[in-house]
Length: 546
Image (cartoon, rainbow, N blue to C red):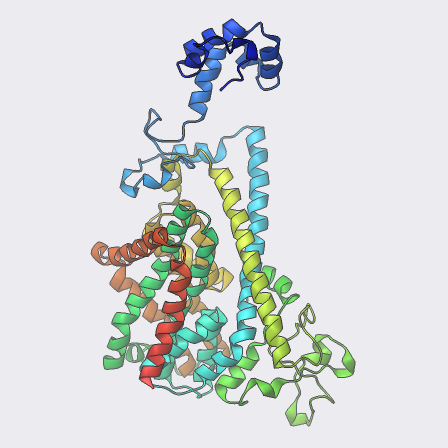
């Protein structure tokens, strides 16, 4: 603890005092207090209180480094304790809402200043985390859009439809986009309602790949990775279990088809496309870097074009790179021609408001756009990890020292309320992937328990069906509305089967915990899991079904 002056080296008992009680340490200090060396050395590191009362100083030091509930008289665990991971949910004591309010709102001016700075830091990292997710989705659509469109274009058997829906969603990193395209295909009579049902089931599985990727951002800490991976895969397991029961039931009885058919109106009014507020905040910035052309996926899926080659090379009138000269569509009925009256864009397009993105290139071919998509994919993954690390660090600092009783009380809401929260957030951001990806780091930190993450993800599943319903309203087609309703009732059916009964609810929870524990044995479990579950097994099933 202390630097021993050279002139005390002859005292054999000096080391003995360094190993004993605060009282003995105080006696040792009194014996050397006249030493000029000691005074000069300690004066630079000791406060006035420490210098006046070394015994009190040592006692405060012991109290200030308590990092375990075993050393704390109350036996409570605080955020950041060394044995934080050892506490089970049933061991967490119950706090009052008064304690929660006090921990939340009763602070001095200095603490409020720290909270303000921490909140600003958290919002900064959260915004760029959402930006990275948006850029990741755009990059995936550029890289996998042609393949996804080709997959969705075929009228297939039920197993192939299920697998194609999953693969298409995994490729473009957005179940909202996939379901919107499926609804459009059904509305255009390119795909039957029955095939559309199997496709949206597959899309439900593929949507969870994004938050599973996000969980790998906490690989630096084994305990955080275990919790984050469990929080991400509980969504996967629920979706897989729901498909395992409802897919054969639909093949045999067509219960979703008959249920939704009985609910259909005679006609659907032509509605307007709705964009969530989060999309309005994040998308314009991401669109300045890269903006994917979703029309390519739809046109290939509906058979308007045979391949992506029909969109290349990209062409801007008079060499001017803006929306009007590059991305405005030709009116074929008026006899307008590409290159004369309007431009042409490929997988990367321009926006009416923000113009052409940084990675747009006049005269680009398919290879050029693919390279741009690959660069943006790497950039988005790097930014995703950096923002995730920054967000986790800010949250850790803000929660340091807070009792688990307080945290658990504040986050332990009723399951139905948690579902409503998950649904509401997903409607706002228009993406279940964003909802679950933002919540995953909180599970990794231990702020949200796995038991709470499950109903939040179930709510996200319900919220993502709103996108399909909105697309059905725009399509002005009753069959499109039926597929969107099938997506909604598929998720509701899965919730009814797996959530209300505690025994059934424990199955996805235990499966997720088992996968989380597997990361302790090897950090390679998450990437191997993603490759095998989302790509290898579906491709094998696709090969067998054909």
